[in-house]
Length: 108
Image (cartoon, helix red, strand yellow):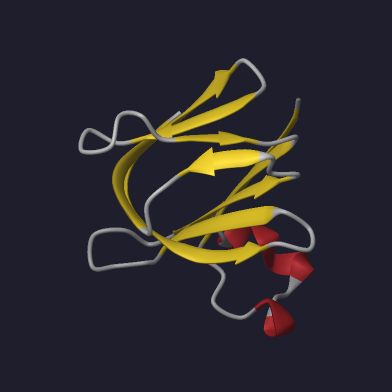
């Protein structure tokens, strides 16, 4: 999965071994993207990633960029979320067709 956006490290939670990256909305894009890896056992990542490619590898996922081709995350789960929702508290599920929402869940 190639994602030609700029991502920043949103969090790493050692208690749950969860790693999360986020790409914000901008002038040229109307959605934000969250990449979350759960059950992280090992990783080689950078705080900022541009033009990200996520691939399935043996025991985990590669998380590489043209500037950082050796990046990886060995994790049990991967979650991709993309949407244009600014405030989930006021989100109206009856008007979901007005939004751009995509989700992918993958478990090793």
